[in-house]
Structures are given as structure tokens and as C-alpha cells.
Image 1: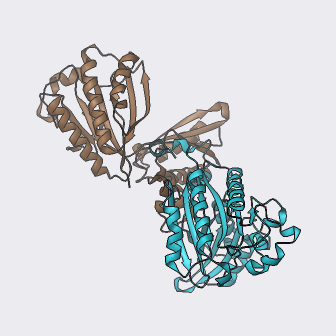
Image 2 (image 1 turned 90 degrees about the horizontal axis):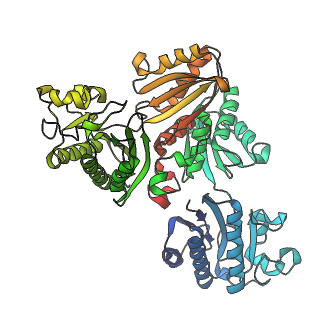
Image 3 (image 1 turned 135 degrees about the horizontal axis):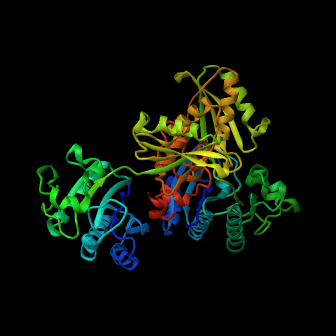
Amino acid sequence: MMKIVECIPNISEGRRLDVVEEILAEVRQVPGVTLLDYSSNADHNRTVISMIGEPENVLEAVWRLITKASETLDLDQHQGEHPRMGATDVVPFVPVRGMTMEECVDLAKRLGERVGRELLIPVYLYEKAATRPERRNLADVRRGQYEGLKESIKKTERTPDFGPSVLGKAGAIAIGARPPLVAFNVNLGTTNLEIGKAIAKGIRGSSGGFVNVKALAIDLSEQGLVQISMNMVDTQGTPLYRAYEFIKTEAAHFGVPIVGSEIVGLVPMDVMMDVATYYLGLHNFSNEQLLEKHVFGF
Amino acid sequence: MMKIVECIPNISEGRRLDVVEEILAEVRQVPGVTLLDYSSNADHNRTVISMIGEPENVLEAVWRLITKASETLDLDQHQGEHPRMGATDVVPFVPVRGMTMEECVDLAKRLGERVGRELLIPVYLYEKAATRPERRNLADVRRGQYEGLKESIKKTERTPDFGPSVLGKAGAIAIGARPPLVAFNVNLGTTNLEIGKAIAKGIRGSSGGFVNVKALAIDLSEQGLVQISMNMVDTQGTPLYRAYEFIKTEAAHFGVPIVGSEIVGLVPMDVMMDVATYYLGLHNFSNEQLLEKHVFGF
């Protein structure tokens, strides 16, 4: 089976779109890498880029992107609302197909080593690639941002995983690995936002719910609905159907029905297959049974 | 989107496997066609072959197969338990992806025209490709088999759609188009076969149930279960989840739970996606949202 990884580098430029294009051109030059999406935000002065492909190709593409960003962006001149510490600020690898998280951690480490050695940019490994528990959370890694890190990087506890303990104009990069994120919204047949808030509170990890679910209640008053808007940050640990069934049960307690749901953006096929096999109680189903598998070889 | 068609020719040879291999070699020579599966049965003296690929490639491959079978098989010498009327006996085209049934009917007609004209083999169009209502059902088309058809082909009502009204040693071929068939079994937590029979009777089209479902109750006494074994012959018309929910409701009436299900063999991805979107009540979900789509382009 072909291995597929997604990589979502965030760069600290969201205003000069010609400069963003120059950096994207580096990715486009690498064969076998698909630029899935990119989105620049002027207020954040930041661009989020998503690419996908076989691991070695993606590794090469993001290496070129980081190199180009370090040549063209200057953090001393950068202002924006979004926290950042580097020209390329954060680089997560996400296993999409035929890959383990360990393989993504390995990609993060190989990239980090090269960035530290060849570009002399400090690299912090984060999330699943973190080498210390206190570096798992990106917000902790980025604390103080570029300006604060200039000094604090000299402290032992801020020593980078790769590269020098000195910050140049390209700043530092957090490189890591994490599961795919799925944006999953469930609509409730009520206009009572308080019910939505109670359910969102019940389902999200931060208030006692599922550890891999972030949730907010949103008032869709024009449609006469309340929406539980979720980020599912690890659909292997907490699949979509479990969130759905949880919400159904909690909502029924208020006499409120689910009236539909939506997935925003992209979703790995396996996440959907898990839903189908769960509801039909399918035993021993394998993706080998998908007709398309035998044509496309995924 | 790449168009994908499946074709499942049945040939009247299931004993001389070297001859079967000779015929399969014709398919293997055509680039862009995947030989999914083939299965020879000596009692039936018949081999069922499944291939998949882009329409023009599959058309070429099955044309070569029919040509070779007409050269190597002699129906005057053929004996077997399975009804048959030709060296290549039946050729259904099945839309797998990006194709309409009409496009498969068109493939059937193009193939039939060429077989009639170049090989002088009588061709009957059947199922969705049938030109007369009484030719929809394969059993009606094949009535009398090879031996009977030698005479009856001279009657007006048996005039073939293509080719001469004369039967040579290669016999006649039924060429048609049909939806994908999914073998879907649902297990019931009971040892009472009568309950299974009542549910199978309720769900199958032939006794008042769903027109696209064929069903039998099977005693899985070793496992302490009864199985509703189904052929879903049109999953667009009657999706898996509808059969599942019907069985669940009927079984509950007897105080019997569903304890699992299975899909035997291959299934188009869209059939599984329909299950997932149904149970989550997903609005506006598109296969464009599948990450893999952007890598494999299916």
C-alpha cells in the first residue's frame, strides 16, 4: 500500500502574497506532492499550507519551503495577531494512509535534524514527536514568541532539540506529528443555545468529556438550530460515531433531536469507513474489499 | 473523474484450466485492465471472470476474450450443470465509478454489434440493456440453452439483437448492463431458523419485500446463529442501511437482536460512503472531501 502523509506548514507571512507565492513555488516544484490548500490571513499575517504525498517527496517539499521562508522572511519585521516564533512557525506531519504515527514522528525528527544542521535554525519537536512532556503542547513550546525566545532560548529548559541555542531572523520552528483533524458539526433541532452549551460542555475533553474532542455550541438562529461544532483531533481514539451517539443521547435527555450533521473540509477515507462498519456491525471488513482499491491501489 | 467499469464474463469451460488460462491471457495482454478475480467450477464446467478498468480498455479486453473463447470452446462438446447457451455465455457491464447505467448499456450495445458483425455470433441484450421487456431476465433469454436455441433462434421472438439467426459451435451470448451486486449477510442472535425464514421472506422482493433484495435464511448452528444472507442487486435503489434497519426492526419484533453482519467479496466505495452519510445524517457530503481523492484522483 502506498504510504501517504499530509504536512501543514504555517509560515509567518499573510500579507505580501507575491512572497507567499514564491515560497509555494518551492513546493510545486517537487514531483509527487499535491498542494491541497493554502490560506493567507492578513490580520494573522500568516499562511497555512497543506500538502500531501508520499513521505520522501513531502519531506523534500517542506524542506525547500522552510529554506525559502528562512531566506525571504524576517521575524524582526513581522507583526500579526497570531502567536509565532519563526518564519516557518510550525510543521505538523499527519499520517493519512498506510503510515503509523511513529513513522510521522520519524519524519519530524529527520526534518528537524536537517533544519538544525544545515539552516542553523533552532527546532523544537512537539505533540507526538515531543522529547519531553512539557513540549507536547504547541502553546507551551511557543511561549514568549519570537521576541521572548531570543533571550529564553539560552536557558537549559528551552534548549532546542536540534540546531543552535541562538535565534536568527528566521526564528525557531516547532516540528511535530499529530493525527488528522476532522471538523465535525452536529445540528440540534432547538433554538435554545443553553442546551447546546450543556451538550458541548459534556462532550469536550477540557470539561470532562472525550479527551480528543474540542467543542463549542453555536447559535444558528437563521436556521432555527443550535450547532455543536467540534474538532475531532484523534478520530482513531474518538471516532465520529461515538461523538454523534453521545450527542444524540444527551440531546434526547432535553427532548431535542439531531437534525443533521456536516463535515467541513477534508476527511481521511478510513474515518468514514469506520462509521459505516460500526453502524452495520460489520465483522472482518477490510479496505481490500473496496472495488476501487484494485484500480487505484490505495 | 476517471471512469471505471467492471465486466464479469462467464465462459463455458471450468475443467480444462489450461484452456481457461489461454483465454485469460487475452485479458492480461490489455493494458489498463485489472483481472480482479476468476473462479472455475468443474461441476458447472464454467468460469466466472471479473475485470475492471477504464471503459475502452475493458471493452477491448472482453472483445479479445470472446474471440478467443469462440475459437477454443465447442458447445457441441460441452456438458455442465449450469445453464448456458454460448462459449462466452453472459457478459454484464457494471458501473463502478463516474459512470451511468446508460453508459454501460452503450458499452453492451457496442460490444454486441461488433460480436455479431465480426464473429457472426448471435447476441441478446439483457437486463438494463434489453431492447424488449421479455429479454430483461437472463433466465428467459437463455431458455432452452444452446441445444434448444439451435432451433428456436429461427422464430421471430428469438431473433438476436445482433448477429445471424444461426447458431455455430460458439453458441450465443447475452450481453447486458446491471448495477453492482453486493453480498450482504446479517447475523441474528437466535438458533430459531423459523424466525430467520420469516425475516428473509419479509425482506426479499419475490415475496413482497424490497425489489432489489434476494434473501435466504441460513442456519449457522455451530455459531448458534441464524443468518439472513442477501444479494443486494441494486444498492442505489435499496442501500445496505435500509436492509439492515428493516431486519433490525423485524427481528426486534421476535425479541431477537442483530449480532453482526458481513460483506462477502467486493463492494464499491460509494456503497460504504452511503452508509456512513446516512447514519450521521451528513448534509452535502461529497467524495471530494476524501483526502485520498486528492492523491489518487478517483
